Image 1: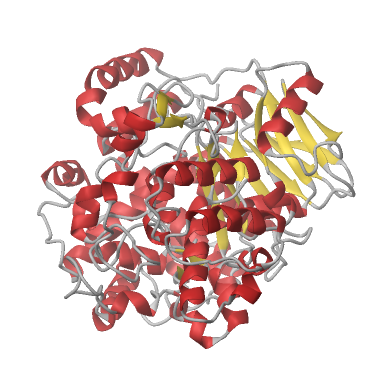
Image 2: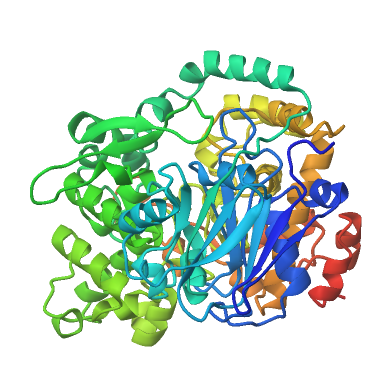
Length: 623
C-alpha cells in the first residue's frame, strides 16, 4: 500500500481537451518526492529547449509532495512550476493555504497542464475526475469575484481554488497564482504562464484522505509541536513576519530607496507589531497548521482594505514600503490587497516600482512617460496607481509589467544600473552587503534571487548550529566571513532547503532536521535517512541547474547587481559592501563543492550519475 502519495498524476492538454492519468511507480516518488524535483523532471524530460515561456509548448505543473495533506503543521503547501516568462530560466513558486491538500483529497499528487485552450477555461478536479469548463464569464474578473462565481457554479462553498487575476490574463511577467484569496505562489511569473494557456483557475474538492504509515508517531509529534511551538516561534505565531523592522533597519538589512540608501527613518511605522495594533483584525492559518501566522487586516474609509485578502508579510511591507521610501501603513496594506485581487508578486511589484521611482528621480522617466504622475520615492498614491497600470498594462504600466531587467534594457544603459535583479528576478527584501552567503545564494539560485531556498547569515547562531550539527556543521562562522567555511555552511543549508521544496513543506513550523526525517518515515513508511533526503535536495538543485544551462545561462549569470558592490551612503552598511573578488572566489568554491565545473558551473556527467539522474546529461547536452 502507498503511504503519503496517491500514485496518480493528472495530465491535461488544453489544446485538444485531452485528459489522462499517469500512475508512476513507487521509485518515481522516492527519487523525486514532489515539488521542485518533480517539476524539473517534467520540464527536462518532456520539453524542448528554448521554448517560448508564454507559448503553448511550455508546461505548467502543479505539484504536491509526499508530506502534503498529512495531518501536521506545515503540510498544506504546493508548488507551481514552468519555464519562467520573467527570467527565461527554471521557474517555480511555493504556496500555502488549503488548495494543495485539496488536490490530494481530489485524488491526484500533481497536475501537468499543456497546450493552450482556444478560449478561457478552468479545470474542475474532484474525486478522481477532471473536467475542462468554460471560463469566458470569469475572464477579466478579480480573484475574489471569480472564486465566488466558481463556487456558485459548482454549488459548493468549500471548493478550493488556485487562480490568476487580471495581471495573469494580461501576461504581466511577474503575475502569480493565488490560492483561496490569501495565499500566493508569488515568484517567477507562474500566473503569466497560466494566463498564456487561457487557464483562469483550477478548482479542487475531494474526499480522499492521505494515508500515513505510522499515525501514532504523527500524533506524538503533533502533540510535541503544539506544546512547544509558542516558545519556539513566538513572533511568527503572534505577528507573522516583519515584527523586528527596527532591528532590520538598524543593521542595514531593510531596503531603502531601491537598495540604494541606508537608515530608513521610520521602520516602526511599517512594523508587523504596529500593524497588529492598528489595522490587524486577526491571524489565520493553513491546512492542519496550529501556527496561525497569516495576518488579516481591515481598513475602512478612503483606502478600504477587505480582510478577505489577508494582510502583508515582511516582503510586502518592505517592497511596497521602505524600498519605495513609503511609511504609510494603510497605503501598503491597500497595495497588498490590490496585488492579491489582481494576482501580482508583491516582491517584484515593489522592486519594479522602486526601480521606476529611481529612474524618475534621475530623469530617465518623466511625467510624459508616467501620464503626469510624480513617480517619486515616498509617493504612496503613485505606488498604488502604478499597481493598477501594471495590472492593465496601460501607460507606463506596460513597460513595468515586463520586470526591471527587460524594462531597463528598453530604457537604456543609464537605467540598467538601477535594475536590481538576478537572472531577471527582482531581489527580495534582504541585504547581501550584510549577509554575504545570502548574496552567493542570490547569485547562484536556479530561479534568480531567492531568499527562501537560501541561508541568512545573521540567523546562523547557536540555535541553528545545534540543528546543523546533524548535517556535520560543528562551529559557528562569523557573519562577515566569505571563505570556504561560510560557503560550506551555505551549501549544506541551501541544499536541504531544496529538499524542503521537494517535500513542499513550510519552513516556518520549527521542525528540525531530525524531525523532518522522522516525519517522512512516519508518513511514507520508507526506511529513509538524512543521507537519502539530502540527495533529493541535491538532485533538485542539479536538475534545475541543468535546465538553465540548456536554456543558455552561464556562470556569468550567477552574479549580483553592481549596486551591492558599493556601500550605503549612511548607516550600518556605509563602510561595507560585497567584494566582487570574494564573490567570484566563493562562487568557484561552491561550484567545486557541488561537483560542478569550476569555470562554467555545469554539473559533470559523473555528478549526475552519482545522483541517479544520468538521463539529465543527455537532455541538457552535458558532456
